[in-house]
Length: 170
Ligand SMILES: [Zn+2]
Image 1 (cartoon, rainbow, N blue to C red):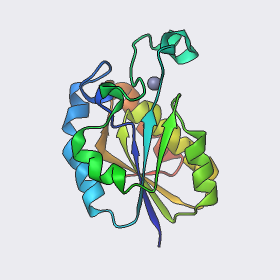
Image 2: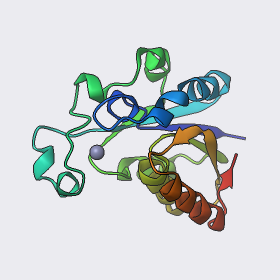
Image 3: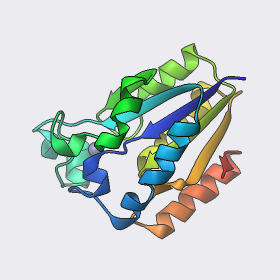
């Protein structure tokens, strides 16, 4: 039985930086607990933009600079350093979902893929949908106590759709 843990965008800008929100700060210990207890492979995604962000399509929709590569807001809190060092892969992505992550899942089969991180209804949701297509025979799980959103309403909508797609919400 192979198990992959995916930590999506748990970066300073989404926690308490330019796009931060209170709920995001509260899930840190739960993500660290998942990492501590996980024996198999771990991957991370990093939302990654450059100084031209505001001119991009996403920048027109979300006009707040965030996750500028190598800046403080782009980084994860230091408690995660050890896990980043031992990660199977780190995916930098300049939009919500990572096609590189999807390709990785096509090439590396895992029986179970568990998700946590930020933001539940945006990048977590997008990458679960990609995983669903990339690896239809894997069991996909989302840890509700290790993800968060600034909108309870949109988060609930995302949960409802994921449940309808057969994703297990823990
Ligand atoms: Zn972004």
